[in-house]
Image (cartoon, rainbow, N blue to C red):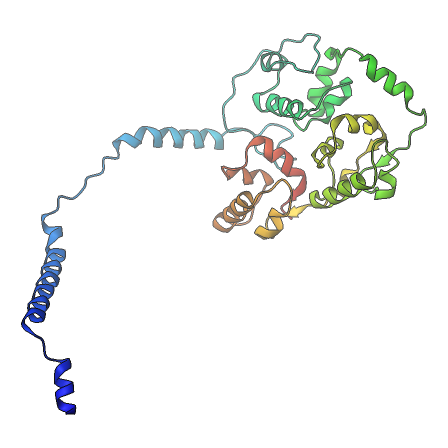
Length: 304
């Protein structure tokens, strides 16, 4: 009885035997085809000549960048100059109102395209220039640039602003933005408990403010409110907490408001491949970090 049961498992009828035979035939055929197919296939020939021009241009650009003398001021700031060659522009000075000034007019005054872009981005977010000193708030305007432009800045006095300034008390308390607690911030006109907490929370995420205009990045805080107490504020940039890009993890980097996960991962990956950063400017090897973003990030980073 037991023998018959075992026999049933290993006995095939005619139809089953035919199926097994066909299956074995297919397997054998595929095995043979796989082993001999490469003898009959024509190997693909890749023509690299189409890329030779691009490769030569890339190498030439890299050599030109390596031989470019770094302008004074860049090395001390840990910055690398733009790799793109820029034509020397003849500066044409004229009296101007920086509010709504066109790209062409800014360039006539000697500003580069990336500097103009930062100014226009600031205006697009509701920013404005009420006095000539306001131009110094911009990351893209260094002291030397401001000094040569200042004599030509002509901003009409707004009647409403004049009345607002006359309405404000003569004695105004000066507040250091990186030390002030929520109670001190609430002494500013238009700042209550909610905004004071938001300012402190955002300041802690940044590692401190490097410019008063960064208050515009605080959620819900309107530019017109900031303008009301702007000149009561001072900023001590020595209090900035910097991130060491040679030791920081991806999580450490992405915790900063200006650094997304992709950018943090890119900074860490470049370090892992090429070794420790020797200058801050080397983070611009990342395709995700342009000149504008680098200028925002640099004050918050260190290599030691």
